[in-house]
Length: 173
Image 1 (tube, one colour):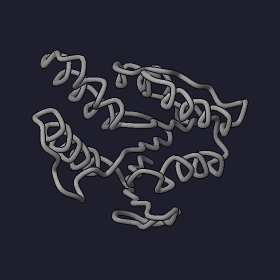
Image 2 (image 1 turned 180 degrees about the vertical axis):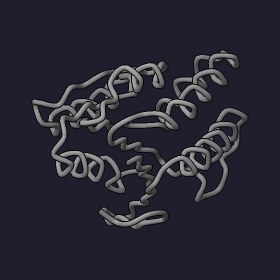
Image 3 (image 1 turned 60 degrees about the vertical axis):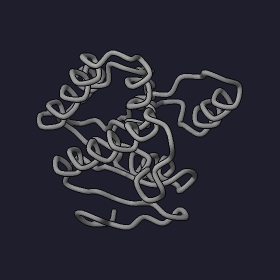
Image 4 (image 1 turned 90 degrees about the horizontal axis):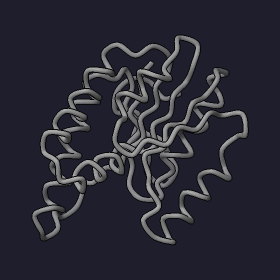
């Protein structure tokens, strides 16, 4: 089953994905897309690492997400991708339009064929005002379009608010 988990900052989306992965009873591979560009982000990454069970396989891939999904998806496994919006940011900041389009399409194509349970975590950014600046507007648009495309490919879409999951598509776990 493919599940998209959306939510705002500190909404509980990563914890929900981690809980669903533990409850699946399957071997878990955690695909992390974050990079530690500053001390505060390094602290966030460390907190996520400390929370994960030691027997989970962790793959760090800031750009080549589809390749990692193909390499680690298994019929009897569970993959967590945390998170799509950090991956999208990495692609936007790489300033390579061809890579951006290629990687995004590769992800969408991969989702059609991947075996096992896939939990995709992402930030819902389109619920507020759109900030000034071309890059931030482009980011909000790209995230919204990506979420729509991924939601169409997932059996379940959950929104987390204040740590509470709401089913937008499919059933609550």
